Image 1 (cartoon, rainbow, N blue to C red):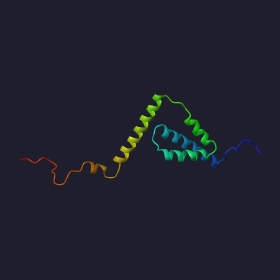
Image 2 (tube, helix red, strand yellow):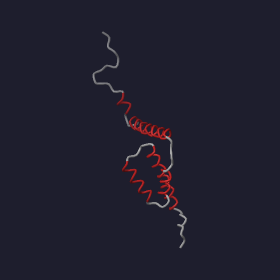
Image 3 (cartoon, rainbow, N blue to C red):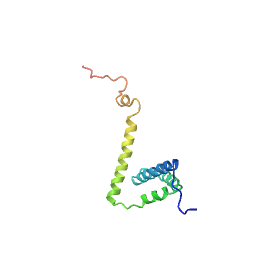
Image 4 (tube, rainbow, N blue to C red):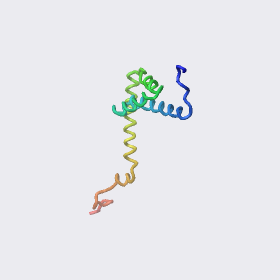
Length: 113
């Protein structure tokens, strides 16, 4: 028996690729402050259950960043959240009609005396 694990093949490669992308996405969400504690822990535990991916995620988290980089990332995360909220608010069906409605009984044009 070899001390090294077998080379992943086929669907195992797809699963590892998906998990690595999830690790990068989770790191980004955590770094920019866009994820709550419970979903973060749940996803991190799932990543730890996959050989190689948990170590990759921990390596991503060990990187050192300056305060300027951290403040920019937090600002960017806040902007992403606000931009997403605005997009969902203004793309619902009939949003233009809701925005420009007038109370009943009001005329469109001023009445002359």
